[in-house]
Amino acid sequence: MSVTVPRIKPQPFFADKNRAFWNLQSLGWAGAFLLRGSSTIANGQPLSSLVPVLISTVSGYSVTLLIAVMFRFLVKKRPIITWGVSIVTVVFAAGLVAFIDAWVFSTQNRASETAGLQLFLGAFYLSMTLLGAWSSLYYAINFYLTVEEQADQLLRLENQAANAQLAMLRYQLNPHFLFNTLNSISTLVLLKQTDRANAMLSRLSSFLRYTLINEPTAQVTIEQEIETLKLYLEIEKMRFEDRLRPVFTIDPAVALARLPSLLLQPLVENAIKYAVTPKEEGAEIAVTAQPAGDNVRIVVSDSGPGLNEGGMKPHIPMSEGTGVGLPNIRDRLIQAFGERQSFETRSTPGGFSVIIEFPLNMDETSKVAA
Image (tube, rainbow, N blue to C red; front, top):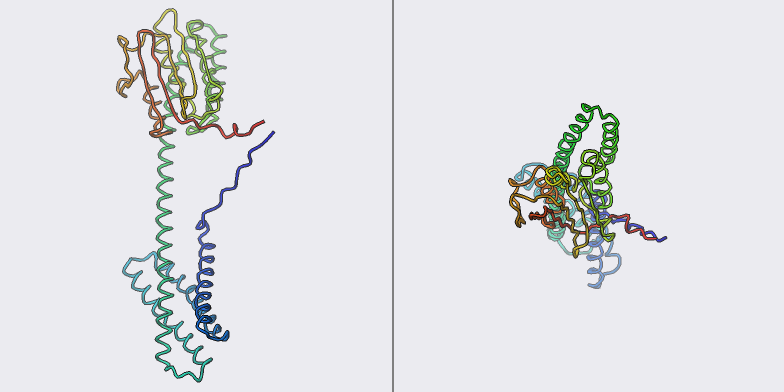
């Protein structure tokens, strides 16, 4: 037996913001030290000249930690306050770093003829450039993360709305089906056919137990959906006996394809209502599932009288549906698969059929091969 071990998906760089900040802070200032140090050595300066560069880098590293604390507070303020105070903070910090750089340089090079003010201004220009770039990068990354958080929040809200819509559509089915079944049980009780009534209640309990364990928004395999459908038909068989003749043809290649749970039940319920009930001899209800390129094609058909006078009606509007089932199925398909699905109805004098296509997404357990 070979088992496909799922790979651990790497976390995004900014999944942990604190860790990402320290990584960028350390890498950024290390890069600045290497750049300035290599430039110093390339100009023929002795190795001792790296000491002021190192001290300047440590000063910049430390000062930007204090700036980060200030910016974290300012980012939540009004833009005019944020930018105004940020500029003043960067100028003051650049002056502090420049003073340290100038003092270190003059201490190490006492014989230098460079004037103190000139030395300070040169260091201030360099510090202002580095701290200005650091501040711009800080706000740019913060803006990016804010946009990402808003996008993620919007996506979560959209998913919640879609799940709520799917749950609402799913919950529409239970009262519709329960009403018919309980009405039949009530009729059996009035006719004093208690054994049949108890049998129907037992099968109803099994059906509800099987279906309610799934989340309203869950997807199941076609194989599981057919098993649920057979439980439902066992209940209806109590009402119609030999008048109800179900036939299932499921291609093994799509048996593990996933679809919204209880998708087919209202289609079969409509077939019973409009094909089996009005005909004394009943009708045959066929459910077939087979591959269609990269999709799954499911056809639910019956041998009833069809719609109206028959004829091809491939696209019945919502308002012309044959009950709760068809609009519900159409909405659930749209919610589950978007534009990657199709829903078609056909009516002929020899029956009515519904043709559904959706992407062939296999159940994960099918990837475990023996």
